[in-house]
Image: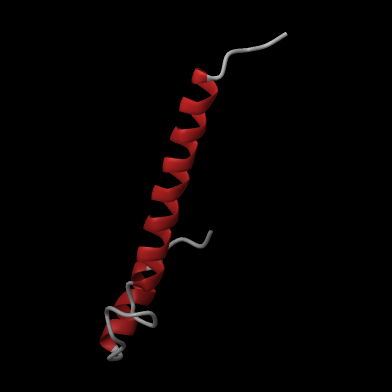
Length: 57
C-alpha cells in the first residue's frame, strides 16, 4: 500500500487539481483510510470467530 504524500497533495491543490472526487487530491488518502478500516474490521471478525469455534480433536 502506498502512503499518502502530503507534499504531492499540496502541489496538486496549488496546481488547481480538485480536492474531492475519484481524481481528487484526497482520493489516495480516502482509499488508504478505507483499506485500513476494512482490514481492521476483517481482523476483528476473524479473531472473534476463532474464539467462538471450539477446538475439536
